[in-house]
Amino acid sequence: MTATADPTTEVAPPRPPSRGAPHLDEAQLEALAADFDAIRRREMADRGEADAAYIRRVAAVATALQVGGRVAIALGRRRPVFWTGVVAAAAGRIIEAMEIGHNVLHGQYDWMRDPRFDSTTYEWNQTAPAEQWRHAHNVVHHVNANVAGFDRDLGYGVVRITDDEAWKPSHLGNPIAATLLAVLFDQAIGFYDLEAERMALGLVDPDEADAKFRASMAKLRRQAQRDFVVIPLLAGKAAPRALAGSLAAQLVGNVWGFAVIFCGHFPADTVIFQPEDLDDETRGRWYVRQLRGAANITGSFPFHVLTGNLSHQIEHHLFPDLPARRYRHIAPEVEEVCRRYGLPYNAKRFSRQFGSVAWRIVRMSFPDPMRPSRRRAAAAGGSPGA
Image 1: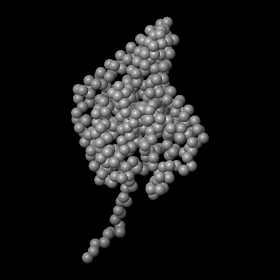
Image 2: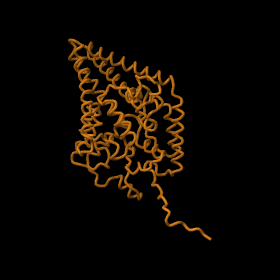
Image 3: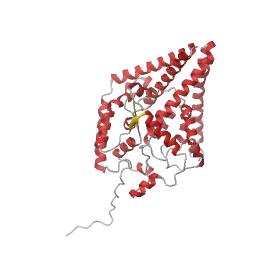
Image 4: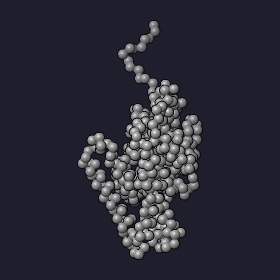
């Protein structure tokens, strides 16, 4: 006697292919997750004095660069001395923000039990209050990385970066908006957690938004008074030169931060995911989303330090709480895993990644009556993707 299926039993429909790895089935995605989990477990278990000594040494270098740079600016009657001071002060500021602040606030050094590098007590030298930034970055961005409509870092609400965002005539100014964002990057991020676009729709508690705004404004005022009033006045007769140096160092830091972040997220071949990709997302699919939504920048050891090791954006999104100094050591292993599963590993030199980002910003200034993503999806019989 042949058994028949119970018509009342619901059979779950097969999951659609992973948007970032359509050639992998669920078993392969599970194996991929196991491989990446193994790397994470090994590296987390190996944390120790070398990591602690590194971050302490980097903090000392950042302080020395900023102090030395300020002195050189004040004493730099000759242009070479002045600009050397600007470069040193900017480098110290960048290292403090990216290699120390960003990584400490990810909890990468909480295990040290050192209040100087504890994510819950650390306050960085950026406009964004640490608590606000941890929410906007660690939670909203990393949890929803590259998901259209969920990841607010997709253009930061200022730049159209994907054709999943409906085109408007105002987007003709995309390159101008991107330039302004680069020039004011730190200050813009300082008010990012206010979620201005949601405030306009009445989706944010006004009291909470007011408290965040006041906190950001208070910190902005403190920093402006220190960098553009107190430090120049301490230079005495060299106050105008010190003020110019402070402004130049701030500008360099802002533009550098913008360039590194955009090169790590928006070059060609990074994939934009859809909200449905978050539905019942497995560990393997999560890894694929982090991998395909990020890009690396190749370079030397000093270059990686100046990016806060966000030149290894792929490794950072795969393992955000792992001390960033370890990313360059595990990168070849991550690349080998990608090769084994037929996944692209997007790592190129800075000029190529930034050129790709610039072209994307220009291209998204204009409407596309036939969205490439929809064309490809229609041809494949699926839903729109990258």
